[in-house]
Amino acid sequence: MPSKVTAICPGTFDPVTVGHLDIIRRGACKFQSVIVGLIEEPLRKQTLFTVEERLEFLRDALSDQPNVVVDHFNMLVVDFARKWNATVILKGLRAISDFDYEFSMAQLNRKMAPEIETVFMMASPEHSFLSSSGVKEIVAFGGPVLDLVPPAVARKLAERFPVRAERN
Ligand code: ADP
View (tube, rainbow, N blue to C red):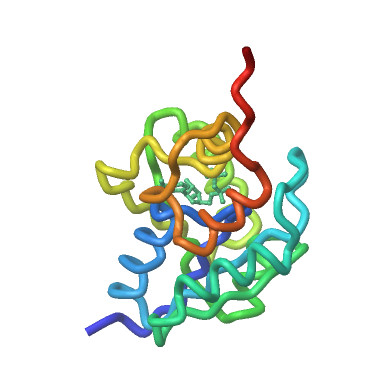
């Protein structure tokens, strides 16, 4: 029986990958509800897809999950959690390289909102190499991403990055 806890799962999701979806679905088995929080304008990066496109990808891929809601925000993560009465921030951890950043964000968030706990789930081994930026790099050079992202995302990526003509 899932606990009566609401968790938020924040991210840029530019675009959502099967690695993100794995964490969200596993979270939905452990918490009463999971609110996927799409960061509208990340501070240090320009997004490839608009807020509307990223939301549509997430909503489409998660339409079979009754206790998952997709929302977007442009505020502190802890304020977004409070908006939804969430007491958990759910994050995925891929490798030691994620740890530094996630550790400091978790400590800062704890300082601002001690009532909210950051919970980490280890990436499934088959997704531990997978990132949105990796997907964009592969597709930009004509590589296959069909098993890395939902089909609707793969289609949109193919439109954005038509296969490059071979150079002689
Ligand atoms: P990315 O790092 O791919 O640009 P986001 O900024 O959208 O993705 O990350 C949101 C959250 O999803 C972070 O907690 C990140 O560690 C987690 N995450 C991203 N990719 C994966 C994956 N392949 N497996 C597990 N968690 C992941």
